[in-house]
Image 1 (spheres, rainbow, N blue to C red):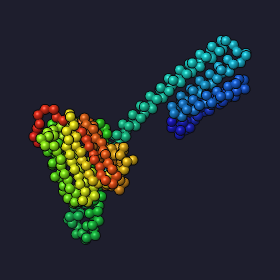
Image 2 (cartoon, helix red, strand yellow):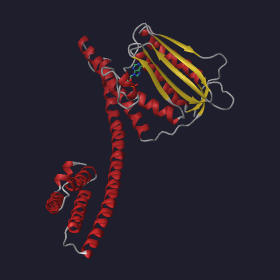
Image 3 (spheres, helix red, strand yellow):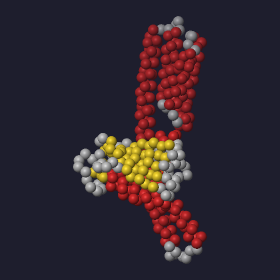
Image 4 (cartoon, rainbow, N blue to C red):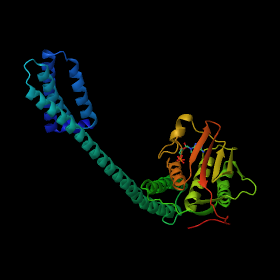
Length: 354
Ligand code: ADP
């Protein structure tokens, strides 16, 4: 429950005060007239709990119902009781309980609707933010590149240096925004895969070739293992699976030190095909592993990434009917594995496309 909301509403607080006063007064009366001191706790606890967790109105009703049932208990235990009054009070007590239940349900429903609205607004905000951020960055990069070319004014070495640094930071910002845009697309469930027959072996070779450019800079060797005569055709969204492969390979190189290795394996797993990207890099500490596919989660704080890549990768793999997981040993390396359903018909040659 939101305490500020609760105490901020004067009328509600006033009603609650009356409810609590009634409960306390009747509790004292009950204690003085019968052996039921413990009932003070029994009545007050539900009132406090319901108010706290469900809401003010449900709390008010609970306290009124408690007060009524206390009157019933007090009158029933008094030697001066009258049958009709007892029946009337018992009936009121039941009505009170019924009203509490109805109120609790209504409050819960209201809260659910409010949280759904909040979630919708959050998604709209993320996607609007990402869209609006992109253009100014692209335009700034354009002007910066003109300045760097020296067309606007001859530049000295220091100025060129600063501009290069600015350019690097802008590239980073653009990377964040693009990840953010992509994330908002998957987050809003806009993404519907278009499955086509897609040859993983061909795709993998192409990506490994591209990754070798970065790998060579760090003296990282990349190996590719595929069982002989294996047909590696899956039924999946070609464009997005390309993205998954690129992302896992990028990470493997990013988080592996000089002289390390990256091994990509394709394996047959019945109706599925399994892909493994294994590196001899920094590895992931055990406590980070359960969160590694969460959006914005980064195990290494000073890394350049946005922490969105793996969350997008997971969404893509699962939307295409597969599963993804990681095994890692801190300081030794990581193995990211994912599965995808195989294409049931004859193999195709080359890339699948939309
Ligand atoms: P980022 O853009 O930060 O790389 P990712 O979502 O791709 O975002 O990865 C999330 C985090 O998982 C990274 O910040 C890093 O700490 C960790 N991580 C991902 N891949 C590897 C890997 N191959 N080896 C070690 N840590 C990794």
